[in-house]
Structures are given as C-alpha cells and as structure tokens.
Length: 275
Image 1: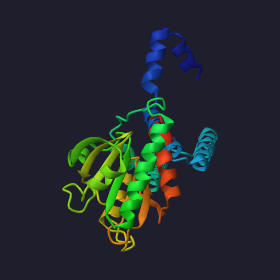
Image 2: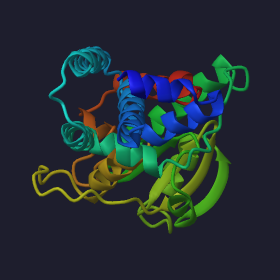
Image 3: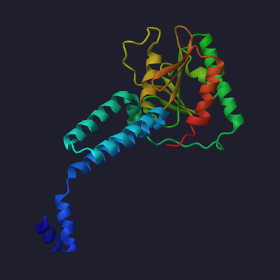
Image 4: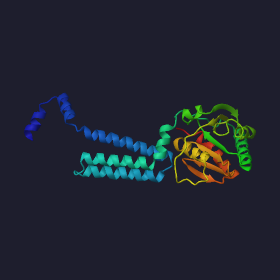
C-alpha cells in the first residue's frame, strides 16, 4: 500500500486524473443514467395523470433503493441492470395507454389564453354544442365530436375535410345529417372553431367491450387512447350520449349537466393547460 501511495505521490495532477479516468467503472455511470431517465419518465407520466400516491411510492422506493445500494456490497452491476429492466417493464405495462398517447401527441399544442375566449363567447359555444348533441340524441342521429387542442396526429386531420367554421347547433347538426357527405367521420373542434369533419380515427381493438358500443364508441376510445382529447358520442342505434376520455367511457347516458361539465373542463382546463 505504501509503495502504491508513494508511486501515486510522484504523479502530477494531470496524471492522477487520467489514472482515475481509466479506473472508473462506466457500467455504474450507464446504469445511473438509465435509472435517472426512467425515473423522470415515470414521474412525468404520473404527474400528467394525477397519480400523486404513485409518485410518493416511487420516491420512497428510489430512496430505499439508494440507501440499500450505499450500505450493501452484495448488489452487483448485473443485479442493478435486472432491476432497471424490471422497472421499465412495470412502467410500460401499467401506463401503456399514457405512453402511447405521449408518443403520438403531435406536441404542437396551441396554448389559448383565457383572454382569447371571453366567458360569454365560451358559454354560447357550450350551449350551442349541448343543444346540437341533445337534438341529435332525440332523433338517433349518430355523431362523434372530438375536443382537441391541436394535439391530434396530422394523419387524422388530413383524413377529413378542413371546415374552419363557427360552432353553432345548426352547423353541427348539418355535418351529421345522415345524408351529408361527412356524417360518418368525426368532427374535430379546436377552440371556438369546427376545425375539420369527416375524419377517420384509430379504432380500438378490444373483444371485451359491450356489444352496444359500436364503431363510433370504438373510434372515440381509440383516439382518446393516443391523444389527450375528449370525445362526445351520440349512438345511432339508441341515441345515448357518451363522454369518452383517456381511453375509457367516462359517462354513459350523459345529461346536459354532464355535457356542460365536460365542455367547461375542455375550455377552462384542457385547452389552456401547459405542456
């Protein structure tokens, strides 16, 4: 040991740094970077989906894991890699919908400030939309409306026709009139405009869905699984109104109050949320 210290003592500062660099175990550095990235992604997904309890569990797990690694000499680099891969599999399995949605969101969301849309204007839009949905429900007119903030994949918009029209009950009902050319597709609302209509959405493939959920419901489930949007569906067979979000039917047999809550959430929260 003395000989080693004596040998090192004769080295210059630059030579000591080079020797430390050569003796460094880069495996641990790679593992630390991988774990840091995984932790950040998991924290981001949980935060965006209001998973406060899971965030606390995740932080506690990281602290315990760090303490265990600091005081244990039996944890090898191979063990750390295995644990990291297991953690990745768990996160991907539990949050596959959220990950898919984050990957496919265009990321070019328009941040509309509340000053751009007055309270009176928004209230009028909400009333017009509710009136149109209720009228179509009474006549069993099938409809699919997607409330977007410019975060849909470009392929969805290009599959339909850009309308860029004001949101009024007659306009919405005209688009979904059974003999209208665009009635089979989805209507995309962005802010205070009907941006596009006749758009084709990804259909969710799930054999466990109830039979009463037809193609419009499957399309609503599909698009809300890949993008942070809300969909309103009117069944062509029953006239039942459904509200779909985050890849699940949030409300079946939606009333005017349910519709107002969903639309208010869109205009005062979803549309103005920060990315």
